Amino acid sequence: MNDNTLSSFLESYAGSGTARLHMPAHKGKPVIGCEEYDITEIKGADYLYEGKGLIGESEKRMASLYGTGRTVYSTEGSSICIKAMLGIIRTVSGRLRVLAGRNCHKAFIDGCALLDGEVTWVYPEKRARSVCSSFITPADIEIKLSEEDFDCVYITSPDYLGFMADIKGISAVCRRHGVPLLVDNAHGAYLRFTEPDRHPITLGADMCCDSAHKTLPCLTGTAMLHFSDSCPDTFQEDAKRIMSIFGSTSPSYLMLMSLDRCSLMLADGSLRKRIKETVRRVSLCRERINACGFSTVGDEPMKITVDASASGMTGDALADKLREHGIEPEYSDPLYTVLMPSAMTGEDDFSLIERAFSEIKADKGQVPELPSPKPCEKILSIREAMFAPCEEVPSDKASGRICARTITGCQPAVPIAVSGEMIDTDTIRLLKAYKIKSVFVTVKGENL
Ligand SMILES: Cc1ncc(COP(=O)(O)O)c(C=O)c1O
Image (cartoon, rainbow, N blue to C red; front, side, top):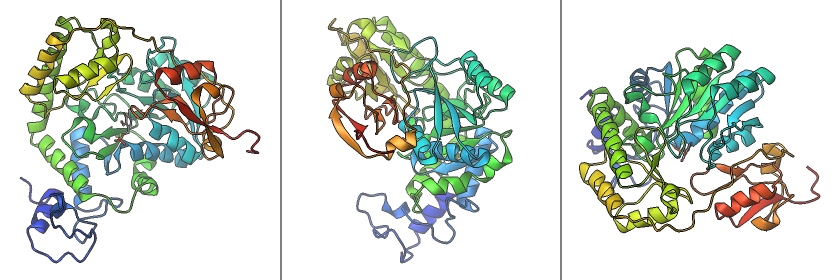
């Protein structure tokens, strides 16, 4: 193993017996057991938002593995990378007018509020059954870019349910119009290592974020922000500065070590091999689940999403049945149940999943059809509404009021109503379907 890595620095420091007269206060003594590698930015350990030493070297290794122009690490998830991507566009363009898919994560809305972004939502003709998905096509983007000027296009792919957008087609449209393409690839860090390579940067995106912890063997909160080789130099040059605006000045070295280790496992080929094997095993698992009479959906190669409603049960009921078999799913809602295996999932777990599906009998209960997300009337900007005085009202009393705090289910944090939008009867039907009992609306008569 390469001795000049962040991981080897941390191992050697942990074994050195040095008196730790620096933060953090646990001094490397085991409280939960991982403290010896949990240091702060001491001499030799580099600074995350400079990245000129060991962190920078690790980031460069990762960039070469991903074939990017630049890759920077995040110890605060994709959430901070999303805000940074928007901040970079805001800096370069002097404003932030975004064309976006509605199935975005809450971090995108928060970023727009902080940066005073203006969003035009794309509602494709083919309506998704869930707020988590949006079947945006290159043609949808072409129409909007021909009608109006935007500073960037923002797409979430893969989405929480494992549906993937045509990033190659969308990036070609964006390039023709000279508009940068930003992709929330939080669920697709591993896509660079599948066959074929389906990573957004390979497919033509200018910037994308990957949550390492979602699909690679990394600690929760680890993520990467990637820049394509061909994106403007100013995007890459401003990366660390903009990340630092949103981030803590105390990055976690446990997370950085985790990213560094992951880069070494990718570099020596061991993890790439396991990813390819896992993708094949997931495909077989899906076939076996379908052979039991269930219906899997989505095209993301490492996710298993079951459309429980097609078997006459709710996704939540199916998730409960899986729990009875010792399986904890990633997510469920009235329609779907999502399982997220990874390169660390063993054969025992795949067999357990297949046995469970062979034993579970669909209840044939009532499955509610979720109302499709529809365009809402925009009354205030996201920023104006998010920071406005607000009050909590029961969801069924919210019609005609302006949404103050963007409403998302706790998972998957995809908006049902966005700050500044008028809540109407369609929104209320959606709120009911997602069991959201109360919402925050702006206070009537406030002078905004
Ligand atoms: C689609 C999507 N984007 C972004 C995020 C935020 O990622 P992180 O938790 O790494 O900050 C999530 C989190 O679940 C997500 O599902």
